[in-house]
Amino acid sequence: MTYLMVLGGLVLLFVGGEGLVRGSVSVARKLNISELVIGLTLVGFGTSVPELVTSLNAINADAVGIAVGNVVGSNIANILLVLGVAAVIHPIITNPRALMRDTLLMLLATLLLCTMIWFDLFSRLGGALLVTALAIYIVFSLMADRASQGAVAEMHAGEGETVEANYGVALGALIALAGLAGVVLGAKFLVDGGVVIAREFGVSETVIGLSIVAVGTSLPELATSAIAAFRGKADVALGNIIGSNIFNILGILGLTALVHPFSVRREPSGDVTADAMASGIGNSLISVGDIAALVLSVALMVVFAITGKLVARWEGAVLLFAYALYMGLTFNLIPVPAIL
Image 1 (spheres, rainbow, N blue to C red):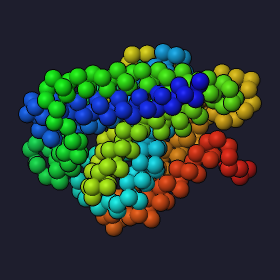
Image 2: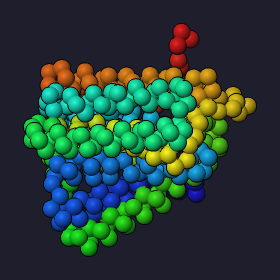
Image 3: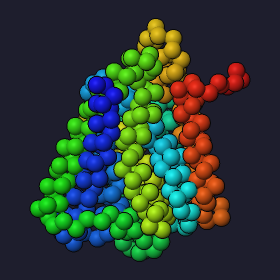
């Protein structure tokens, strides 16, 4: 029953996320909102709603490991899994100039996340600062893109154009509301089921958040990127992933901390297996290895995107191998050398 709950939660998150994005984009188009605004706001935020609702549900259920692991794991999965799949399907031609601004912000946001985890700064003030930073980023980006209409603006407009949705205002709003309801219900199923599975197998909730929950909430990004790649527009996938990672850190964790401040410190559980699989900085729920995986995934993406102005198929395969390796280490399926 628990596994059906988790599977049902994953399906609802995927279908609900797609419905929410397509419905809201359809309404925006009927209201004559530009593809630039749609790509920069609705697509980026819409594909991150599953992460937001899941993290809020997890915090309310006192499953902080799932809430934070969900965001960290989703950002890792977005790069290693989603970008890897998109690049294997179709090589991604990149424009370093177009990516520079958003990539730099993603790097800064990632470093900020690592700092907040290290010093346990998820207070209401910390959440407000993250949300404020996201608002500033959106406003600045819209103003800069509208003024220049350059490569960056084209990239964000392309993200909006990949969403096929022309349902009309009434039907679009209905689809968006149904999608939101699906996301909310799916997040509850996924969190409740994830907590039960963690207890049954003696692993930490953080591990479940970093793996099952993270992949589940990244399904909208995976679907959007894979479809774009099949249509020969794989370059849009890269912009979508960067935007989603920014939203995850500044928006998801920001709103979660703003609504319900939390701590990533934990008390020893007495369960040796669980403690070993979630051993972090001091007693942090997020381990040094998880932070290293996040930073290295971002570094790989930047190197692959800039060198040769192309993310080749073999580079996509490297990303997928890195994700499989990370999952193996997370579940202790791969022995870790004593030196590490």
